[in-house]
Image (cartoon, rainbow, N blue to C red; front, side):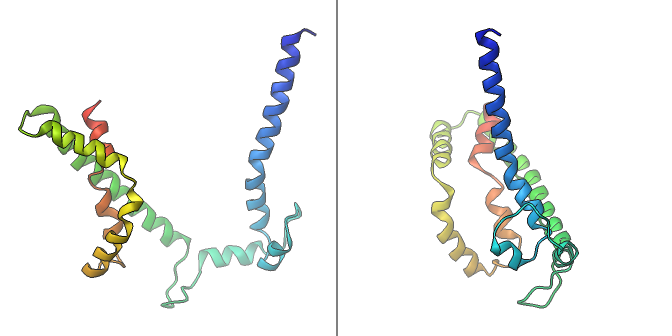
Length: 165
C-alpha cells in the first residue's frame, strides 16, 4: 500500500461517517413518525412506535382548532402549489418586462435606476416586514394570498438576473 491509497481510504472513511451523520435527522424523522407525543418527549430510540396510523389520520384529517374546518395536508399542498405557481409566473413576466426596458431602451436616469435596483438587493427583506404587516392589516388582506404573492412579483434579483443574461 502506498501513501495515496492510505489517504484515499481515510478520506472515504471520513466521508462515509459524514454521510451517516447527515442521515441521522432523516432517520429520527421517520422513527418519530411512528411514535406518539409522549414517546417522542421521552427521548430518541431507533425502535419504531405503534402510533403510525393515528399520526397518519391526524396529518390527513386534522381539524382546525380556530374555525372547526378540516385542514389536512392536501390543503397545504394545494395552497403551496398555488402560491409558488403564481409567484413564478408573475415574477418571471414582470421582471422580464422590467429587464427588457433596461436592456432595449436608453432613457434618462437608467443608470440611477439600475443602481437603485442593486441597492435594493443589498437591503435585507426582513427590515420591511413590520411595515408590510401593518399595511396589510390596514388593507384587510391578512387572511388572503395577496401578502404572499404581491411582494414577489418584481424582485430586484430577478430583474438583475434577466438584465445580465
